[in-house]
Image (cartoon, rainbow, N blue to C red):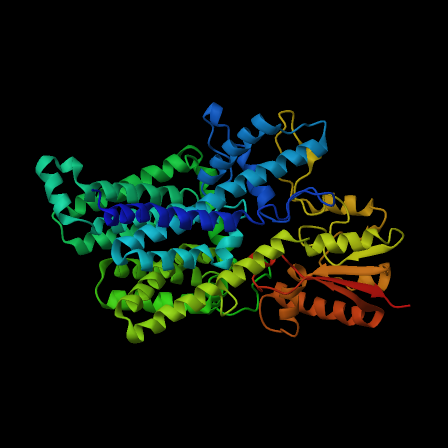
Length: 581
């Protein structure tokens, strides 16, 4: 007679991770069509998606051309996106230089293909967290840690974007998984060595960890820090072939990086230019987006709390620190990675939420460990389990509640679309934009959110990034029903929130979103700092003074969510002001 208990345990080992992966994937698929082409606008509302996609089109796998001449990021995700776009063209139709509408439809479908890749990658990261934890704390802790990442609101939202961050974090988590698997069965290692050193599972896992760290770096350069976990684990094992395995891990990491981003050796000058640009951009900041905010070391604490949840972050970091105190090697390695990476991004001027994603697996593993300890100890340990349940459920308005709320925003009509429909019901009016038309504006014309111009399709149907404000302003000037205006001074040296829009052009309505106004509102009254930030605060104050004198706030569309720009993408607040009679 077959023993049912072992059979049930074997089935559970498959059902639990599979169920968790499917739960994470279903959550990420809901709302994945947010901001794509519709009757009001052609381009995605995500400002980076069109640009990343356009650069990916320079890659030609069939011609073995993997040098897109763009190296702000590594090339791997661009290559994957290009393959997905080619498959999209093959099965659903590609761009047509003679048909702008069909070309934009193709771009939208390509964005969706890139988003599906990231939905799978985000769900895969949840699975990796589960597998790491099950190795050390069992199914209860593994399920808790996996769920913590599965419902993390920021991770759920960004898994629906066609960008590099989630894909890079997924590859990094695999590198960490193989590094921590070095702490496996010592007897298996000894048995393999008796047969052949080549079959040494430690050497194999060190190589795999290095490969995935290199692939992650080939997607986003910070992935190279995955080697920290590998080298610490190797160093604390005290095995005879430590140096050999460490060198193999580093070497395979470098090889994998070059395979993922061949421009590092085939297009060296342009590669250096892209890397240096990204380093300078991170150091100096993205305009005034983060001007007047706290140090990154403090700001990213808020990013973690808002992106995951206070209870999960607190429990996760406490669990990770306690496990390290108990001299668990896996916890020491993860905590070291966490600190190094955190202090690296903390010193940067740019403080986007997405920069913290590589830290999420470490927090989720610490959270799962804390819940497992509480579950095992019973009694007072139940407090940890209770905190875990409250955090996962969203008692602090994050966790599942936060993920569902943000999903609702991505399923409903975008505030920019709602505002555009409002204006189109007043076809004889004139609508003034406080900034040049882009992703932050209600789309008064169909190419408003885009930095691409389909008129610039080449003969092969490839799209190239434009980034020229004058193209969009020309289209804005040609709008009717309603007519859109933006103040452009005679010398062409325009800047957002120019009070002369109010005092000289005097449109019937003025509109802008928090994506434009929030940084400037924060800078009002600031007299010390970068000249650009001081000027922006001063100009915004002049603008709002003139605005409130001549206009009434007619409508506010949308709910305020996270103050960080890359979370506001999905649901900015749009203000509609009407000129006083």
